[in-house]
Length: 538
Image (cartoon, rainbow, N blue to C red; front, side):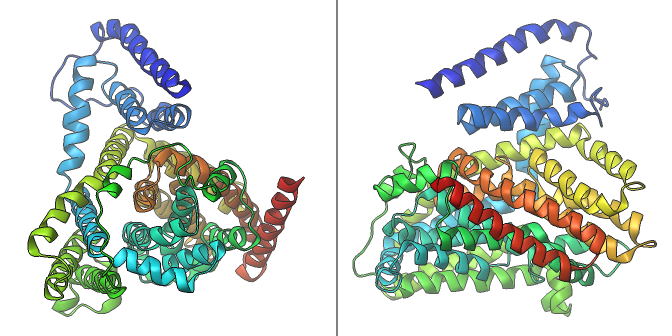
């Protein structure tokens, strides 16, 4: 009842805003197709739309309307409060535009195909068989969580692929050991972007390398790995939390409820209907899950290499750096789906008709993630149109000439805030890394490496915290966890990792060597976790 009241208040506020803003249209620019620079362009107002969406999502616990209100605020600011052009901009410059983008469509195709594969594996009994096998080999809740972490670390090619694959494989295992869906979502999310950003062979390494103009991008990426404190400390924190059983904040409540049989805490999951329609076949074997997953991994890697020109003579590293993750994952997942269907038919596990029935079922399971992704991309388009990147870039450039030793820590915070507000890591890389290279490449190369790593760490941290981040959305989908539950339970963990990383970047700015800063960060992280555990007991 309280949640419904909050949602009603939010919509009443929106209606009031429309009433107050309607007279402004009298003085607004005439309606037309000509591009007009918004009055809020490259000002602090450019960050208002994502802030509105994030705050409403955390207050109302309802993500769809919160994102849409953020989009509406962005459209009003983009169109200088002209109501008619704002409505047109929401669709033409927003939803229709992002759904017309080939990269975005490729990710949606990958989502749908992966959903179909999960449905196939469940119907064939592969997931149930793996759950039975895991039940005889993984005896404890700690073991189930550590197995999830290990699998997440092993699948380092791409964060989208990581989230959905680890979720589909480990869900029956963690459910069997009464691990909450919120905890599973955190483990998935914490082994997605943080692992990809320190893996030299990944779509993220390719993206970062492309932003370092005039330098050997891959070499710089490798040198920056020991300084990527947020990614490394997140992994340390995640393992520490599991081993010493230190859950705190909202996650502690979710874990306690899970031990009593309630995996969701807030009632029915968005994905529960799809789950009820799954048919587990007792005759399924572990290979009915492993072969499709291995096929998917191999095909996706080949697909990414293909888009990078590997089969036209380009070397492996260059091909991976030049790959198009969207197209590569779509092509790879398609062939993985075909191989899975052929295998099930050959083994007479499923008929062709039943295999085809799994495709729309998989699509239905991914509808919540697709809707949230579409709104998140639209909100990002609104923020881009307001010049949020230009505003943040100007702030960083203004501070680069002073507080030099504190600059990595400052850049980390700026990256956190920008990625949190916009929901994109790669966009944050694109804004901050060229500025850092220009500022330090000729004066202090070692500080440039630390600052570049701070850009990457800050972007991953903000992405990790943001409710409108596509990776966060994918982690919710992979764990089949309510999205707001995932965000609210993960946020306290991410904030602690960010605080320790910030202190570590201050140390790195003065020491300018990872051999000093990284051990300090790891020791500090473990000390903080032990302190939190002790306080929670008291």
